[in-house]
Length: 221
Length: 271
Ligand SMILES: Nc1ncnc2c1ncn2[C@@H]1O[C@H](COP(=O)(O)OP(=O)(O)OP(=O)(O)O)[C@@H](O)[C@H]1O
Ligand SMILES: [Mg+2]
Image (tube, rainbow over all chains, first blue to last red; front, side, top):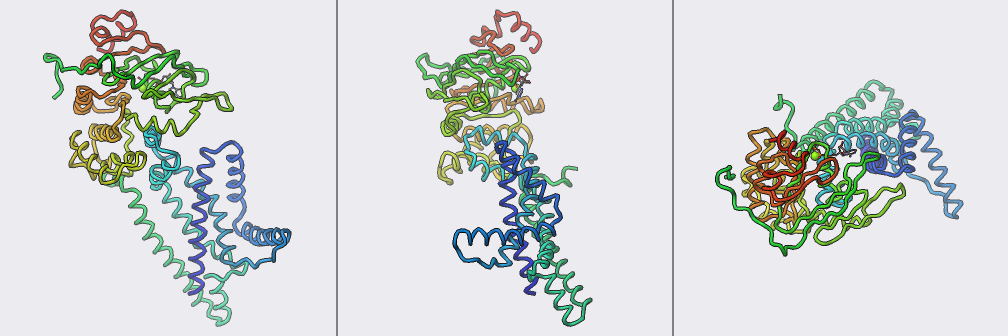
């Protein structure tokens, strides 16, 4: 149970971080200068090309090591980075690359005229982002982001390799101790499934809300 | 109802001393190699209705879009409300607005109505109408709602206030877009072919709303292909040909006694 909570915690944190990176990344890719665009292209290409497991190992060990080296260099104590923070940071970094592309596509799907109207009425870039661009791109982004969320819930299992106590590791340990492999792994599978079902339900609600201005396809037929 | 032929509508004419709301001088616009506007001048005094006519690709939309800097002019002077738009050259040699805040301030005084309505699809009609007053102009929400309700009554959409744009006909959407423009109490209304995207049977209802505004003395610049309507409501007609003002004058002259051969031919073809 604690394992499940940890999994959800990481997935939530990583998705939020990923959304932040993704929103910034998408805008950078669409409206940024050439340097910003190139950097983002490198980021999304590499992160999406390298297997997640490798990235997690790399970022986790290299990342914590780098931070500690920087800290000692500046004369601070080494810190023990919490597994939770590291897990969120690593998965969020990976999610950010995928979110960038999902959100970029969604922004491109907004009818251009609506952005133009916002400009024509004197909205500042920040206001336009908040009031027009983000809400208008949401219906196009939700399906892709929902996928990312579900993948995030399961990617948490990969963090077991760096010793983070989440659902998969908890299951393996419990199964190892009691030798009741089938029971525990079956229970874990059911938990993952439940998580997905609950997520689907919630995402469906959010999607319906985000599409409030759009006639449903059924009616259009 | 719209005055049809026989009884000419009472046309509001601008006083000679009326202040100049829009002043465009020697405006040039290039898209890369394509020279679209080649030195256009235009002036709209308070209460005037300027109709811009011309063939497809003559630069009508581009001219209108330069006035509120949706397109950056390549060179020339644009004054709105007596305030000259400050332009500068960027690192690529393109002309861009020098002061974003100034552009935003000027834009919030110009009510633009687009060919494709461009209502915000995630907002109901009333939300569309109060959006700019509340979030750009800082009007209190309940005041903005009260005013928006009046405007929706005016364009005949009172009972559609909580409906999303996608559920409305083109004519209704365009009338809502006009209400959105009126909500900022604009110094000048800019219309870019407001009826070109509409089914023929919906054109009348939109022209009626625009005609009422013209008769009330709203200042407007109107790009249109509806020659009969332009003749009825305009105080001044500008005929653009190939990026230049080929001929301009009062509607009686432009439609009744055109001088330029091209304009004669244009009117023959279209009317
Ligand atoms: N963003 C742009 N980039 C490149 N060329 C453009 C752009 N916008 C317009 N043009 C070109 O500029 C010319 C004038 O366009 P504009 O839209 O102003 O014509 P118009 O008079 O409004 O025509 P219409 O009656 O068809 O609307 C056209 O040749 C068009 O292809
Ligand atoms: Mg046009």
